[in-house]
Image (cartoon, rainbow, N blue to C red; front, side, top):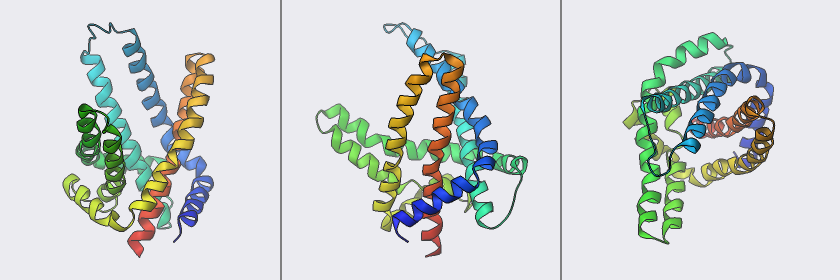
Length: 232
């Protein structure tokens, strides 16, 4: 299936299920964005010469990891069940998603370290940092299906990383293009976020949550690519 067909199907799925997707993800996104805004405020107000990172900040980071894992698990489960023709309730999906949180958190840490390592290592050397970014993007594409392997195929974190790397060998180009589709959303989101800041904290929270919700389209597109390639 062509990339344009995959993106079209992802768009249609997102549009047709937008109410259910919002009910499932917006409360989690509100929590996530709210914590991120608080952490951002704390960093801005910290002493640059002696920044303090205490227990509340560590707990906030852990909370972000848990919320993100629940979000990804719930979104993936919902897409899988709807693709199979089932009609699960929001409560059922959220309850079932909790079992995947530990695996997703571990998989996220391992794959995140692997993706970030080339950029961090080459950035320390000097001008070759751009090569590191290219390698990181390539690894990101090869590991973009780890979450689906954990939730849909019930693999362990390490098994999921290996399976994603093997599965994506012939899909790297398409996967990169799907991932790059997030950048226009990021630019639009940045503009909207700046407008939200001018309206104060509550408006910024709403705007940033809306932008994050729209950004879930990339996950929907990746899932559609995964399903098509798995069937093939």
